[in-house]
Length: 83
Image (cartoon, rainbow, N blue to C red):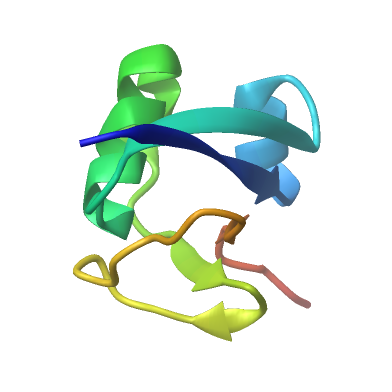
């Protein structure tokens, strides 16, 4: 199995946790969104504190078992509070 990089883009509190809007994450071929999130939680333990986080690949919402492909962009969208 080979590794490849994906771009992770974060908004709101997720961006604050990562310390920036985007980063490159190395994942193994066959990795799912859940695996990518586990890798992010290892790097940024504060992600464990978020009760919910919407995830999108290439601007489409996905669930945790979505298989990531090379060149994909994972977007982290925290809940939005309004008022």
